[in-house]
Length: 316
Ligand code: ADP
Ligand code: MG
Image (cartoon, rainbow, N blue to C red):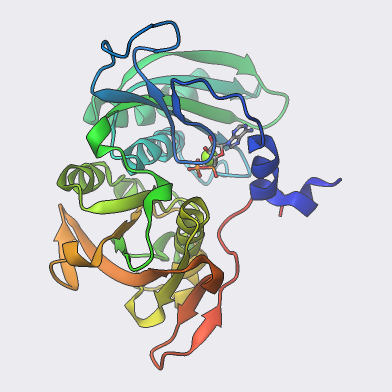
């Protein structure tokens, strides 16, 4: 079977069909992070020692010519981008990042100066978010530069947000605008590399959301993932999608790399149609419906349209 037949998501589904699940694994494969009990309860007789927090773990890898191009992208930007992808996953669970491991696969031609530049990018975000770089691995790569980061974080049990909590009737909300990176050809731009960690924390602490995901793979993809995990469907209102300046609707729906937040909220918790979370504008872009309705786009006249499954997918 060729990889292109399954695609990235099909392949992950195949891998995810394993049952090994210890009692201290709260969430395994399938969300933005794994969620574990700390300290591990596996060898304890009682749960008394269990803290009020969960441990979060996530990992993301960037590969030259897949996620970035040289010399187009600066090493500083690549370092930041690798951190952002992970920080964003921790944020999407309602948590805060604490520690990271950084693995670099280096082609022979690379200079020490460039690696220092990469770490300047990594450190800039580590410092801003008080993340300790506590290890990693350094290996040679026969071709492409590879940067892989594993990040740990924590979240209070009561603030944990999963992809799987959306209920029929909930509203679908997003922070920020969509399609900007796609419209600009995904060039790394230092100024735009900011994750919604503050806003995600605010949403988690208000305890108003029923599910949350980061939009790294595109808006539609994110809604589809929430629906898959929550076993529901969705209607996205076409005229409510916040399209970034210079972008078109398709780029907003399928572009990706925005690292915004997509979350669902009970209707009763919504104060007004347009509001703010922290520094970000919040938009209500749709509604959760029954699973059998699927995930559809509704235009201004109320006509429903099918959506492409959409988003960036490896091997496709
Ligand atoms: P994200 O875009 O948030 O990083 P992914 O789409 O990469 O999420 O992954 C979806 C889920 O599948 C995550 O829970 C991730 O940990 C898991 N996953 C991805 N690849 C593998 C793999 N090779 N083995 C086990 N789990 C995987
Ligand atoms: Mg990933």
